Amino acid sequence: MPVPKEPDPFRHELRLPKTPFPVKRHTEVIAQDGATAEMAMDDGGPYPYGGYLNTQTVAGQLGFGLYFPGYPYLAELAQRTEYRQPVETLAKECTRRWIKLKSTSQDDKKAKLEELQDECDRLGLQQLFRKVTEHDGYYGLGMIYVKLKGDVGHRNEPLLIDERSIGKGDLEGFNTVEPMWITPLVWNSIDPTVPTFYNPEKWMVLGMEVHHTRLLKIISREVPDIIKPAYNFGGISLTQLIDPYVQRWLRTVGSVNQLINNFSIITLATDMGAVLSGGDPSAYQGLLDRMQLFTKHRDNQGVFLLDKTAEELSNIQVSIGELAELQQQALEHMAYPTHEPLVVMTGTEPSGLNASSEGQIQIWHNWCHAYQEQNYRPALFRALRIVQLHLWGKIDEEITFDFEPLAEVTGKGMWEVQNTKTQNMVALHAEGIVDEMECREFLAGDRDSGWNNLDVNKKPDAPDLLEEGDVNTELRIRA
Image (cartoon, rainbow, N blue to C red; front, side):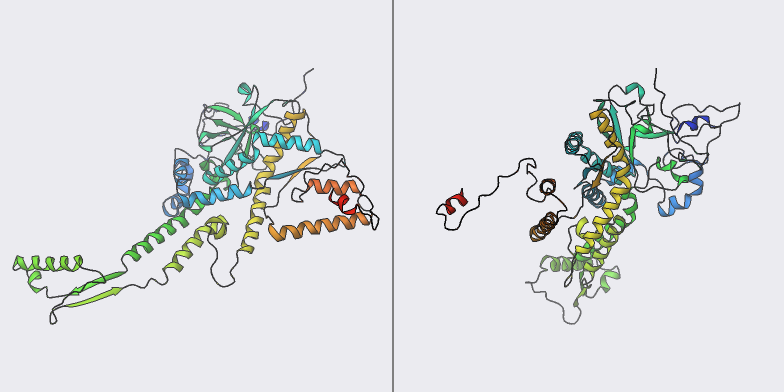
């Protein structure tokens, strides 16, 4: 007897009175009841402008750049350091320490957790999320496709994350897909009271119809509903947000460089009456010869002779004392929309007496953790359930995960932390709150303890009690 499929929350879309209109029509729009099909108000039209959105946002398009510039342009921006560095920094920092699997059960599930962790490492989930974060930064949208065995003819069908759809060994892997190759096909643009409003049910991936449940989506900077179709139902890229700041930075750097090269101008006041009167041509040639003579011998070791009564030499200089401050301000403005401290984004330490970036680093780590929770957790939750079905054919609801702290303690600070942990465990054991085995498990589970390779099931032999005056004491201690 076939098992009934779980109802898909997007299926009510098919019963709407009219078919929603996509940005790019890959299939013919069929009007119902003989009515004439009309383009929806959210039509994005041809790239890069179109339809309703063009008429309503013309001021933004022409005056402020508040429109979707297109994936080809955004891909070009990824070639410049000023755009690439913030995106790569965020992606690397958010996936540097990754996740720690844990169980909410009292049962010992260490073996299952290790098996699940090994499989996640084999599938490269950490690297996949780093890559999809870069796509989100460059394009405003990141997609991970769930690749199952034999899914070629079923990609347009919902993927239920349970044993009815995914069995043991069914998962082939996960693949990132750049949004350049993805276009929304069907979405609900009629009823804003349902969760599926402006949330595409299906996507076209280079001509292949793919159900949204087979894609893990990352959008960290969503746009209002009315302009989502123009943004390919993605969000605003980080490169687009920092574009005006980068343009100002580049102009500032160019102006400063030009000013440094030309901050000093030599002027020669001489008699130019004969030249300006248009008289003797030899007078003009004589002036050129004098200019060439001065330019040829111009350095700090040369001597320039002047006509005492008819000529005067002067040096006009522009102050460059504040140029460094102006350039630094432009650099700080460029870092503002990225939430990244300058020491993180550029490696530039703060200047000034007693200046420290420690507080900024802590704020940056907190911001990255919030980014992980908001954007990674929903997709990771689904991915881990899919991997569990692939490994065991069922989902262990008691297995969950936490993101590892991004701050790392080294040197003396690390020793102090571990010493405090050890003292706490000794005190808890002395009070009878934990037993010896729990202490050993704690040491083995802490990768920074120095005892993470401890075999918890192998207890050490009881120490020999040496009597005072024993002649073999020293040898036995050494042994």
